[in-house]
Length: 471
Image (cartoon, rainbow, N blue to C red; front, top):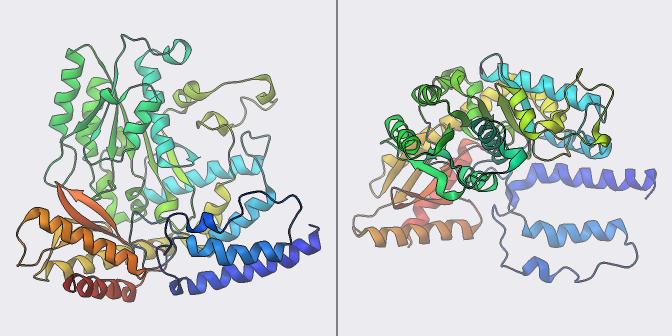
């Protein structure tokens, strides 16, 4: 494909992308396909000869698009948002055109230096303490793994990378029973073992109980284990719980335990001064992560990972074969030493585009709109006799269930709400996810798609009521 042919097809596809952004509401939110439908329409063998781009693009529209769940649909209320925006899309187009692999400063100085600056912009935007050093990771899970690895190295006197984990050494990680499964997965990868992950009980607000954490650390130390890493949450996946960072940080300081804060979703809300109370004590943390790709209009993937001691992270992850050496070493940052993968995308460019295009105040307005919509929707449900709030709103997330007076058996209520969820999602007009809250089957309602407006939330509430009462 020469430049002129590329130009022609690029214009065609950009026109389609603009139409998609403008008319995404015309699609069902969740893909209305059955397992195997898409694979059944794809050839089983690769073509021997090249095919025309017009034909490839036609197949994209007729085969791929029907099998896509539309995360950018304003009635997407499932999981957490993975929101995007036109400035972010434009930056990704440029990133793909450049095709840069940004592992070293030398392999793209602009990528490295812009990443350093964008992380400082975000730090100041969110009010995080000075002295934190940032890096863009692929996900919050990757940042949690980095924290677990760094904590393991510090706890073992920097020997486990060199010598492996001795059978007699039991390093232990702690997180709340409400926390994301990424801590358990990371602990398995990092050699802690699932048996050495402690899920700490939570209080009436689903937040980690500091006294329970202290007791668990002291019990492990008495048993000859090494309390190594605590992962606290700022907005858990299920209910949006926020752990009390100050008392947790003080316990970690008293017991020389590494503290990582997983603020994957909730951390973006720190751009709102009125929400910064949930970060009280964050200066005691050794590292923290939040995802602009969840709630700052920057398309996946883009996780902002901050560390207090970058030398510890680099010492944990650095490896220096001859082909990665450069004459600038020691004068610049090589971010390949700051994450598990060697290869790195130019993720900072889309952050630069988004922040400059929206402005900090523009981003604040969007988040405030989402939070206000969630507050209003929660109020509608709380005031309706045959529905109830199961977990109160945290930022722009809450959990609810249908509870008609005629049903008082908990197992039957669970089945009823599971049926309600499936009917809502199968309809295609909205999309929610399920949850278990203290054993109760609940429906999560997360508001955060870039273009969600009051009319979308109102329509979803009408559909929920109509569907529930037709069961």
